[in-house]
Length: 483
Image 1 (cartoon, rainbow, N blue to C red):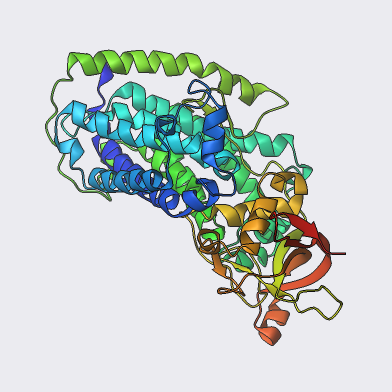
Image 2 (cartoon, rainbow, N blue to C red):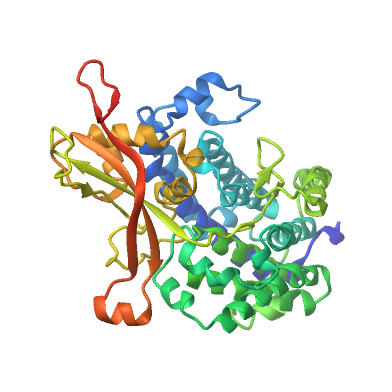
């Protein structure tokens, strides 16, 4: 069936697979290094507890068969190595079934992690990676021309990501309509990066231009993806430029990198050959079994696309929603609301046995979230520091931290080693603190003049107590608030 093949997009498929494999490497390394402390047997939100209460139909996961922290690490590191093999093109050089099976293993393993990840994996880019990874299963091997249905489904995915993000902005916060959102966003985003200070201090007319550009890139340009070349390639190029701008201005895990990877599929061989002068191999006929699976999967995904398509048209548009436990077709969006002021939580401990006005509190330092005003923001994306991100949400409202914040405090009072490894610095590495408290601070970027004088990035002032001092009683261990 020649109509199913798109040999003119062989280079796009080749590059897309390498970019996706690289993101899988990051995602699985992230899980190996953080999952046990956050969600392991003794984690903040233990996954075994969830597995005991949920049925496989509700939360499909390999961990229903067996769970241990060692197994999670082994699975994650093994899948990272498999992703490296895909990055090198090794499975793709074999038969079609081998390439498909390899992509399927990564998708199934990551689905297993996300479905038990609870709050720590409740981010839109998790569903995005799963939906993209599922489509990659059907790209075939290196000798098959890319399948036209999968290329169009990837464009449909990209359209939903971009147009959905644009619509949720227009429908929600009025600052997107009056063009003022970026007066605040670079300063108040979850994890600023090393350039965010400079973006924040751009002239206001440039911030308004940024918002106008965002509306064009997300509400107009995506329609070009469905038009013939060279219009589709131009639309993809504009989306790539927009994503690179976002990468420069903040830390959003692999969201922008994965969006960029999906945009690649809209470039044909002629366009990509200008920057990727690879020799295109001769094409082989697709096996019948592969063709049948391709057509069946395409029809299934088209039917399932009803729900996200309807969501795009609804006034009450949902952001980052999945409609099935396999995360096959999802809704996306980001920053429908922009915070105007930055609140931060400072977790502090003391060795004093009694809390008095003279008690000296020492602060725990996180790897990327703002803490010490003199410390410049770090570049961590495409890596994802899950605890740092959720601390930003916790500062917005205690409701966001109801499930995991007090378990975190308990772990710090116990000086739990896996938990401490999630942090950059613990003030009491060898002894348990007597008390932990959480202070609420208001942060803002320094002005250029303040920065020249103080050499600091942030100005902060304490605005209140988020959590009163608490300690652990010896027998039985439980939290007690200081009088």
